[in-house]
Length: 190
Ligand SMILES: *[C@@H]1O[C@H](CO)[C@@H](O)[C@H](O)[C@H]1NC(C)=O
Ligand SMILES: *[C@@H]1O[C@H](CO)[C@@H](O)[C@H](O)[C@H]1NC(C)=O
Ligand SMILES: *[C@@H]1O[C@H](CO)[C@@H](O)[C@H](O)[C@H]1NC(C)=O
Ligand SMILES: *[C@@H]1O[C@H](CO)[C@@H](O)[C@H](O)[C@H]1NC(C)=O
Image (cartoon, rainbow, N blue to C red):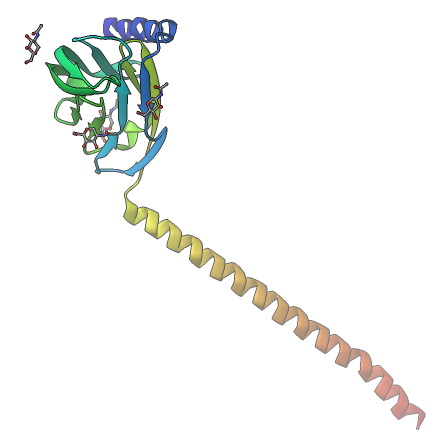
């Protein structure tokens, strides 16, 4: 509970202060992965002012996943980090499942579960970006679903064929039935 309040306050800080001009890039705003796989949530950033220390953090709406605090770093003139020395903290719920890359902020989420489907918030100094992650049942089920879809199409096609066959049969018999009285009438007449 206390942790989530801290997280909200931090988030609020991120939003309120998010006008300082750091450049933060999220390479894909939305990614999909199947259960059990690993996914790299790719980010990169540049820092607009001279700084040796910076901090970034990954969180979901109510939980901090991981945090990196740089003590000493170096940057290109464009502000891209090239070297850093600092501390990585992975919070308990994500221990053993998460790696973060201090130079670009990317987060590697391993062995994903269905309930990892959510929005991930990346926050560096005072800017934040979101990545939406979709976790679906494994690709085998996805393949089966596709196959089932295809079978459904064939099934509907067959039903339609059958329907046309039956209707044309009915039409033909009606035609024959319709011509019979005429024939018999002629027969009676002669
Ligand atoms: C921000 O970074 C991206 C990629 O690193 C770059 O293409 C873009 O021009 C940068 N924008 C600013 C305002 O620095
Ligand atoms: C971030 O760094 C990691 C590790 O060096 C690398 O695998 C990944 O491709 C980088 N991502 C981007 C977007 O630069
Ligand atoms: C940062 O690292 C550089 C290069 O290793 C070193 O010269 C410098 O003293 C360090 N600064 C701090 C504040 O630790
Ligand atoms: C997500 O699902 C896994 C099992 O697939 C479970 O161990 C974990 O506790 C769940 N997490 C949440 C937040 O519900």
